[in-house]
Length: 102
Image (cartoon, rainbow, N blue to C red):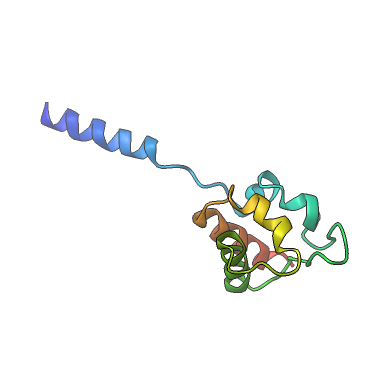
């Protein structure tokens, strides 16, 4: 009985833990593609940055700052509208993915 309860709790905890999508999937799902291009190399306008190959820590910091409001210059207002949809863990995955694009 005790073992059954422990196993049930372990299964429940596993099911409750969200599965994090990979960075590429997040890039598509969170609509990054709309402004920064499908390959993160050809943004919608010249004002938007090319994100492919960006340093992961830098990209993560920029996204965090836009999300928190610490960065509100330039095109940050456009990003602010979507950053509330992105968790901190997803920001890390997005930044990692962007840094790996050649």
